[in-house]
Length: 74
Image (cartoon, rainbow, N blue to C red):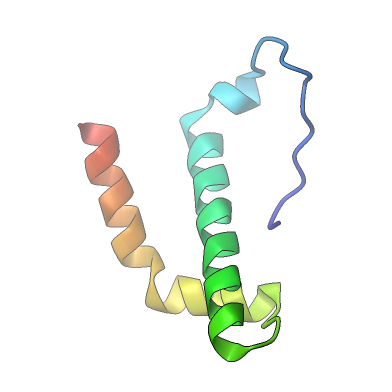
């Protein structure tokens, strides 16, 4: 995972969890994790988080973020 998340055992969501910026950060991290898995499967070995993150940012982040902005705007 690209960040550490502490579960609040189902209690009321924290300010951090309600924040749009934090939710977008979490979604981006999940997308990078998915990218790492897919690229590792293609390569036949674990490509590592640094390579996955760099590849995702350089080759996929702009399009992904544009799609997220459209989704948020409705």
